[in-house]
Image (tube, rainbow, N blue to C red):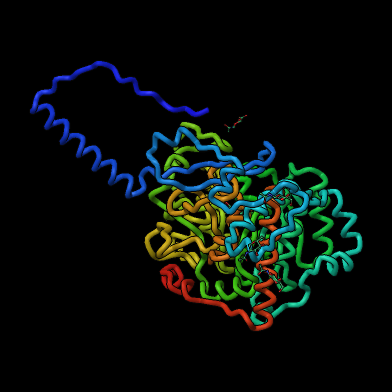
Length: 478
Ligand SMILES: *[C@@H]1O[C@H](CO)[C@@H](O)[C@H](O)[C@H]1NC(C)=O
Ligand SMILES: *[C@@H]1O[C@H](CO)[C@@H](O)[C@H](O)[C@H]1NC(C)=O
Ligand SMILES: *[C@@H]1O[C@H](CO)[C@@H](O)[C@H](O)[C@H]1NC(C)=O
Ligand SMILES: *[C@@H]1O[C@H](CO)[C@@H](O)[C@H](O)[C@H]1NC(C)=O
Ligand SMILES: *[C@@H]1O[C@H](CO)[C@@H](O)[C@H](O)[C@H]1NC(C)=O
């Protein structure tokens, strides 16, 4: 059954005057040229969404970029697994239970057979999950747990030992994924403040506490708040952790994470990158893309009122930033203790999405003598001020990469076919991963970072600092 259109050939005749004909031809030429130009410059770039299924079971969405006229985007092209296999190699899947699990190495290399097999494998093979409520039992004997899970309990290099990092991790669900994130970033010299959303289920709270109990340098935030996106509570949770972490004197940099992120570099590489930063922060900021209403009207939680808001109490440059920050210890000191920061903090409380304004604006206000603040134009740009803190695939410029996982509210949840890109990225962390979606993606990221850590320790893998020291924000800061 196809949807062919039949064009009826009627006995119509048109008499067109010569002049009219010429105008028509020129109009056509102009239109075609315009269409061609917009096509070449990718104005019409859209995504084709292929649903991938097997035995009429849908198990994911396969998205590919294609350049097509915008009017075609209405017809999202759905493709079945068999169609997908026309582009990817043919794989005989008569018995799905007999598929050998593809190796991470093949997936990272973009071996198409391995990718197709992995998609089928993940759909049909059970992946054992550990329920949140299991963690207090698993960690009852901490020494045993730490040994079994192979936590790194000695600093690997002197360089890392002398450069501790403070992390805040905001979580609200999935203790297993949180534990696996903690395991890959855990080093005895670092500090980890875990903020569990107060509305998370009891088993999530208990699971996180039972884990923290096993490590001296992992703790639950002293105060837990109800984190509501868009309200001051996001910033509050972050500040509680910063304050809790502050009492540990040794750490040099602060990085905040959520439970759905994963490192793209080893701890040693992150230390080397932060050393290159040399006091600079990596906090995004934009004036052009800032929503002025957020700071022009008083907000009640996430709702804007019509009451105007006065100017900030300090001469700050208002910018909008992303939710991911890497900040120097001196910056955190300023945020927690400087009078100007405290006044500004009070002021942002009733603005819209204050967490996106607060750190970003401080980082782009060298006039306030904020440590590590950028002196250049307050406008994030991949060439001068890239967000090395986080790799995110937003599907729009400048973060538009094909997403072979699943796009949820624009952001890509990575899948196995994204592993190649992830293995090549130079950012410190990536957002985001869901252990329930294509779980081999997470497994392979673990294997990749684990192997790199091992190979660096053996001295067979080095660190390439080019790229990192080339950016203006590293040389041009307070
Ligand atoms: C697929 O594999 C089955 C069993 O391994 C075999 O009987 C069948 O001939 C194969 N089909 C093709 C097209 O190779
Ligand atoms: C990690 O190392 C193991 C052991 O050498 C190897 O078998 C595996 O393929 C490596 N994985 C990756 C992703 O390179
Ligand atoms: C690609 O992956 C398949 C399935 O995992 C494997 O059998 C094959 O050897 C791989 N090819 C290469 C060139 O590594
Ligand atoms: C804020 O909004 C809530 C309900 O959305 C309302 O009950 C409360 O009175 C408002 N507060 C102010 C100060 O307007
Ligand atoms: C990091 O901190 C900023 C500023 O408070 C906040 O907006 C953001 O949600 C935090 N990000 C993560 C990943 O926790």
